[in-house]
Length: 265
Image (tube, rainbow, N blue to C red):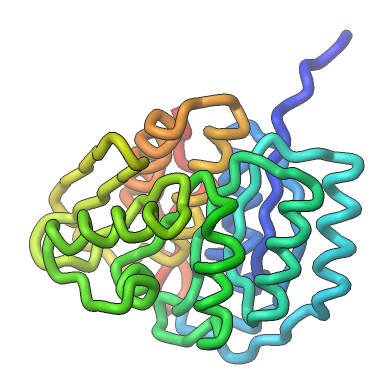
């Protein structure tokens, strides 16, 4: 009896010992979408639902070796990046993506943890824009990350629209700005250079939101790995994350993780 091979996705990101974000969240999300997940770990963090206690960056050569080992044997149909820690690593990942000619790349520009802990040094921010952004199919910053990348605070839908266009003009294939921290409704805006889509919904009153950004970008990556077009992949991922938040159990004493096993259909 033969089984069809599932599509493969690669995540290049940090490890979350609490299991709610990072590599762990990505692999669980890939599995929910019936995608075979591979990984290159960029950092080992000691964290839980309360916060990040310690970060150990994996040597750049070891991160590159992980990427090379995966893509030469288990070539991904799509990939994503999360926590990249420093400028040297950002540049090395960009080089690997170019040299291996990897496509359907989603960048989750992880800069600050939900707890407020900084996860990216300031020197790496320019490299994200100059080296990695032009390689992306999509960048998925939250409100705070987008504000850092475009250099000004975002406080309205118009600000989100301007930021999405700014990022595409600077090289992104498309930009999805996550406006969950705006006053009022939660708003997500997608701009691909020619078409704009907006998702607006009432906010869900909960603290069970750890790993939402990782789950969203991983779900989009999974959709792209299945061959979905970008708009469909983003829409399906947003609906998945809504279900993941609504069905999240209360785990830990801080910001509980979302339910990465939520229905992906």
